[in-house]
Length: 302
Image (cartoon, rainbow, N blue to C red; front, side, top):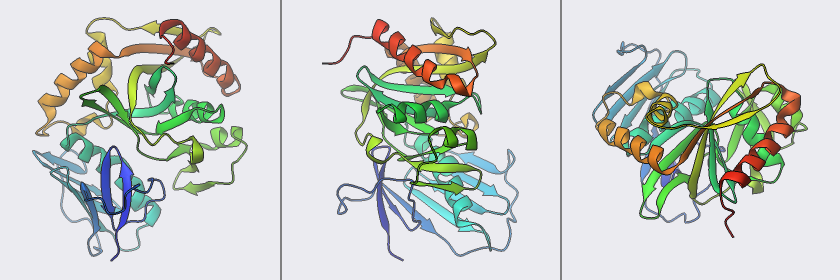
């Protein structure tokens, strides 16, 4: 089977699975960092995994999704997929690009946050928060206003000689129907499992970006939005609470390293809570509010 060569999270991925959500690698001859392979189909998930449908061990991660597939992530270098007979390719890919790839990021010592990231003149801004709080919707609105996006759903932070960087990843974002409609139902979109998948197109940032701030989105009943900078140990706790699938970290060989990395991120990046009235019609006001808050707090990069 031929391999497709993709570029995500600073990694060269050789994949037997066609993944339109991933950008192609700029150098097709590059050596692989990660290989993704399909194993023969199985008729049913027969093994019972601890902790529900997943199992973590140092260097290993195994997950069984009923009706979809079994996934095996090994040493941060390989993902093996055993699809179930009749499984939807879209669903197989959904859990590959979400949970399986998230587990691989943990194995490689990267810090995956459950959120969306946008590139600005002040650096990369990440939006995290509870399920359904509007992370992708806000990112899509920034995209509509001309900002380039780094990733949606899973944002990986890496420590580099140049400092903390947000790594570009998925070149699409997933939107619920109301957010999709507000974008004007773009033509470069398709429905996948439960949401609309919209290509970032030219609005995708292919290069790592300096991490400026992490925003924890929350709703309140007041009309005015608030931008409150966190202090002290609350910063580390908020980071750990907004990890992507934090239960996947427990038992990983990199667990202690990533806790230390949380401390570095809390020390070097601004972490804020952004509370606003949840009103789909006020999303433009929220974008303007954040632009003003950033201009006030950060010095503009020339």
